[in-house]
Image 1 (cartoon, rainbow, N blue to C red):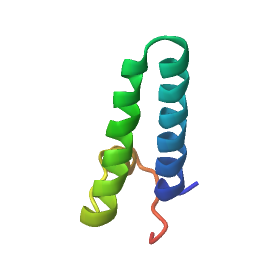
Image 2: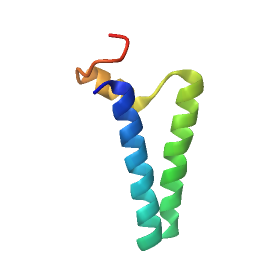
Image 3: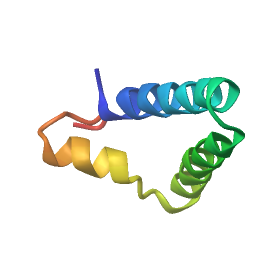
Image 4: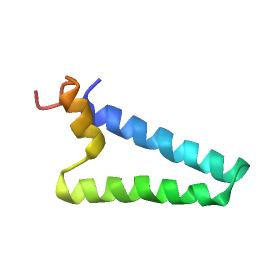
Length: 65
C-alpha cells in the first residue's frame, strides 16, 4: 500500500470511529470527526498532511517513488 491509500484508510476509520463514539458515548465526539475532516481539507490545498509525514518517516513508500 502507498502512503496516499493508508492516509485515506486511516482518515475514514477515524471518522467512523468518531461517529460511533458520538452515537454511543457523547455527541462531543463529533468535534473529532470535524478535526479529521478539516485536516483532510487543508491537506488538499496545502499538500501537508501530518499522517503522511509520519508514514514517510517510518519508511512507507509514496505513489511517486
